[in-house]
Length: 118
Length: 327
Image 1 (spheres, rainbow over the protein chains, first blue to last red):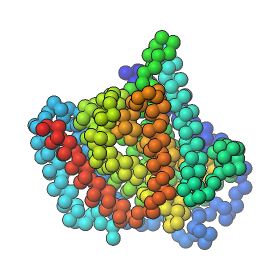
Image 2: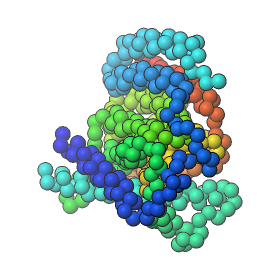
Image 3: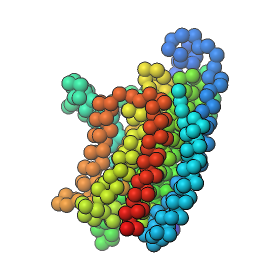
Image 4: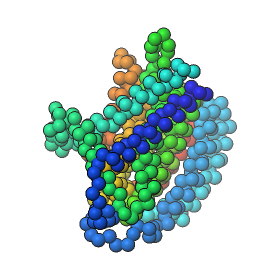
């Protein structure tokens, strides 16, 4: 237990420490001469128009939701894959039914045009 | 207890230093190789054949002005590079880079932690990298950044599905989630999963390239339409941290591909560690080669390819593997 998790925790602490030190170092080492133009939003040299807190296509939300559905499916597949050799035909048919139900959903998504970006 | 702590400290320190050096010299290798692909010389001035260039670049970035634009959300803007930097380094914790070695009468595994759920850990940690990118895009309050961040999140999330599915064939054959066991199950070259899972390997490779936002899938950065995508507003070391994270992710993807499909450190004659790095650099070379060769996808092509082709293919691969194994 300790032998497994301690090195990972140690790595996390070291990497986090390194990240914060890097951010702080550049803050103190670089000189800072702010000016109004320098601090304005970059828009290819043109005066920025409005800000970026506007609306954006709802498609991105849809992709995120689809991802959650399929990712849960994958999480179910992992333990199944590890014990597959013991389950043999039973496991194959069982997972076949599960994936078949999901595939119906997948074809529904495709037919609805949720994955089209034109 | 104390010995475990000391061994862990040494291993973590060595891996971190080697990883940082590899990232630094990967940037040099990429510039050099791209230059030679285009019949140029690449960096030549700093040190022999520009070998000190990465160090000069790092120092230069360290002393650059750290600009925080006025419209940004300061807390998230500062945290985002850290959030994309940390997971990239965490993945390497479970990758075995060599066989057991004997030092001072004690056997040491050449892996930071032999975790029995290694692959799940990798997917869990690697997918945290998306947060850094999305938050960087959103907090910058810049239209290019926002678009880059959104594109990136949608792309990474889409390809993660197929990435997860492509590995399952390997798990079915190896019956373990631990990367150490998976490497051990590929003891001869014919047992390498690249030969037993060719379709899975191809899907994995394509998805891994898409996950690391490299060409031909570099739409989040797409220089000529989005300037630099989600890190347009970043400067100095914060910018460098996104860069370090991206290159660390490239190394991770190559290391995972090596471990899962090319037998990890297994190989004749040469020491295991050398084999591991040889295979690793083959993949890194492939990454750079692809960048020099292929043009960028269009966004609708990218999405259609991920959901319409790779996902069904990955499911088919699992089924074929299952049927062959039951046979």
